[in-house]
Image (cartoon, rainbow, N blue to C red; front, side, top):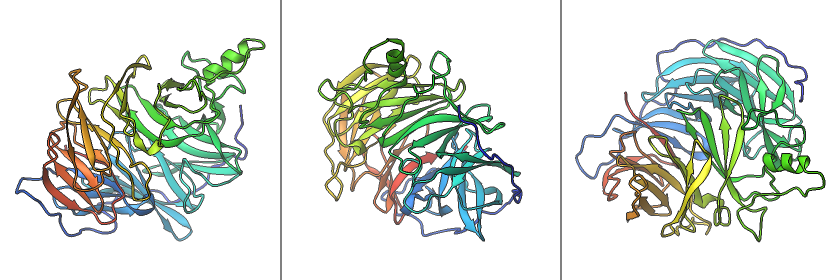
Length: 446
């Protein structure tokens, strides 16, 4: 167990309730190909430098201007940061209308990293500089983590190591972090938990709720990372691919308990056991983690071609490798792969010749829609049927998202989002979003 060194509380300006949205108020509307009423949905989009913005689907109007930001697990808050006279301006926006509901300034150069499920509590970390992300951090020996709410700063921790906040536990009394090793030249990381009352950095529990022994914590090297939040189970499922020299906690413990046994790994390939893919499960209620290994060919090809999606009823978790046409079905309760099937691969490439980023979502009848390149393919996973006809988007797919009823589909495109018929791909509306990098999610009204 590591003990937080120099954990202190510091003063800050409190957040005040506000009634107007900060920043840019509007922009020219989108173009429609058919005169159909557009729904009052909000679209969360990624623009340059990883900044998030919120766009009104009906008009293309910018509701929240681009900035470093995160969206809460329930989809009802977007929290963004801006630099302000040596401090950090933190603003919480209500979704889907984008109204700013609280704002204030925190001491220091900080960037927002995670929120509680409802967005009421926010975790920030000191900014490591341009080009650094939570999954590609810059070198640092110590980390400042600030926890804030609508009233202002609640906790400021100065902790040893290179840490990045990932998620709050359900009680909001602990914060899960990625602990990068070695801190000044990070090439791997482990997941740990910070007790917010004491500032202690502690190991997670195992699935049987035992403390992970010292030296048995998993150290991961991840690529192509995607995650989905399961609201019903309060679990975060994260897809990792290409894990050289990775050994799971359960295997470290088994090797330690078996005198003289070799430390073993459960890679997806017999000829390359250290190169594989798995889904890391983080339980935000009971504070344990567990890895679900994926079979071949997952992890053998480009990380960007992999994607993950949770069914609308939460009964199944799906992982697709669009480059090979592999689809794995995971039981999110038993945490096992219950089926692995093949479909016709989506062979799109990016302008640089690499694999096109993959995306997945569901329509209203339970069809899993998988996109990469310009292609979108459907899999009738809810009925146990095979593939359904695929269609081609006008340009490279940069994200798929739909409201809970699945009656329509939004497709990210270069500089735009399209509202389409999920069964045929017929375009119903074009929403111009200059500089769009990816469509992240849709926030429905109501």
